[in-house]
Structures are given as structure tokens and as C-alpha cells.
Length: 347
Image (cartoon, rainbow, N blue to C red; front, side, top):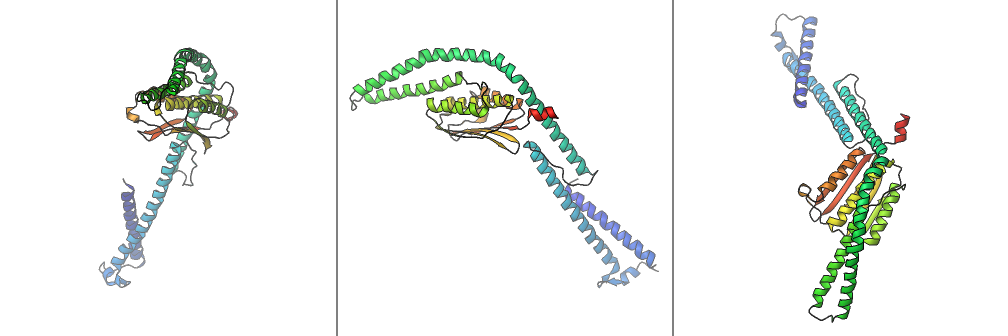
């Protein structure tokens, strides 16, 4: 039954009860010889038998309206509570009548929030316990192969590109600027220069830096400094100081590396924004660029990277959201609830 129908039924029920009480009271206090006598008695210039039902309907309508407004307010509170749970924020029980349906609903919502917090805490604790061992076993194997490939590319392809760039630059300087073939030679030099930039981005991707005892903030700044030196991209950063568990820091740093790598290899961006803040009990990591973007439902090449970042966010009890449109850039945002391992141990 809808809220409107329930209010109407409540109003009619109250009106009927009030009318019945009034008639019973009148008949008991003033016995009437005949029912028609009710038409002869007037109240407010109207027959008594008409005034009583009208008054009863007014009273019932008032109580029904009050009940409907109260129910609507309670449903609004429930909706806001569900929204807070969805966003990972704590909810607080409003003042409601003990033992009512709304009170039971709020208690169930509180239980759901507690279970979600416990699951996030357990996920973060597990990620924290697995971080060091997993880093030594898996990352060592992957990093070894990546370093080998990066070393071979740097010693062969990268050096050859550098030599070709120097050779083309020398040829262009010796040529007559007005010569018809000079335009094609300049184009070749630009292509070699662009290949050098892509090779540098690829080498950064193949040799990802690890935190190695540094904090997340120190690792991010070191990564951005290296990008500034090797890649011509405008970087804006806002990094707040905060204390995080090692497992959370490692996963957030890997997500940032993967996102920046995707930007350098696929976005063709000229500007990159990095945001790391703590707001309302949530750690927020946001990476935005002004690149070519992509259609999320048609993404093929970066699907593995996005899946990997999604799994890392879930392992620490967080959420990952990617917004991208063709020619509009891409924004990646990770939100992780702040749950300290020290508090968990004290509990």
C-alpha cells in the first residue's frame, strides 16, 4: 500500500471512530425519541447529523495529514541514511519511537553499516598482512623481467633513436632552409623526437618505482619529479600529509603508477593533475588529464589495467570510479575508508 493510500485509509478510519464516539455519547447523554430528531437539531445553522460527519472528516483528515507528513519525513531520513552508507560515511540513529517499524529499519541499516565497516577493516588488514610477502614474491619476478626489457630497450632502441635524432638535427642545420626537401626532413626529425618521448614513457612504465620504506606522499613526489624531468607534461599536484597503513599505501601507489602510465601511453595529454586528500573519513586519490579520453564501454587496450586497479581498490575496501569521454580527458578517483590497524588491535 502506498503512502498516500495509507494516509487516506488512516483518515477515514479516524473519522469513522470519532463520528461513532460522538453519536454514542449523544445517544447516551440525551436519549432521543426518534432518529429524525437529529435532522431537527441544528449546530452552526446546519443539521446535527450533517455537522458530526463533517467534523469527524476534518479531524480524521488532520490526523491523516499529520501521519503522512511524519511518515514522509521518516522515509526522507531513511533515504539520507542509505545514501550515507553508499558513500561509506557513518550514520546516526534519529530519535524514533522504540519498537516501531522505522526503528527496526534504522537498526538494520546500522547493522549493515557495521558489517560493511568490518568487511572493509578485514580487507585492509588482510592487504596489510599480505603486502610485504606479496611484494617480495610477485613484484620481484615482474620487476626483474621489466628491468631486463627496459635495459635492453635503453641500450638499443633508445640509444639508436638518440643517435638518429642527433644525425637528423645535424643534417637539417647543414641544409638550406629554403630547400624543398627540408620540410620532409624536419618532419622526420619531429617523428624521431616523438618516438623518444614515447620510449621514455614506456621505460617509466617498465621500471616502476617502489616505495621501499618511503611514505606514500614521498613516493608520489619522487615519481612526479621524475616525470617532470623526462616527459614534457604540465603536472599539478595537491598532496596532503596523512598517516596510512603500509598495505593501503602500496595499493594506492600502484594504482597511481598504473593510471599515470596509461596517461603517458594512451592519452596524449599535456596536463596532469594529482590529488591526494582526506575528507570525511575517506582517503581520496584522483588522477585527471586533458587527453583524448576514451569510451568506457569500448575500451579494449586498457581494460587489463583498469581491472587491475579495480582489484587493488577492492582489496583495501575502497571503490574506484573512472569517468572519460572522447576528446574530453579522463578522471580516475579512488575512495578508501580510513580504518587504522592500531584501532582495530585495541578493539
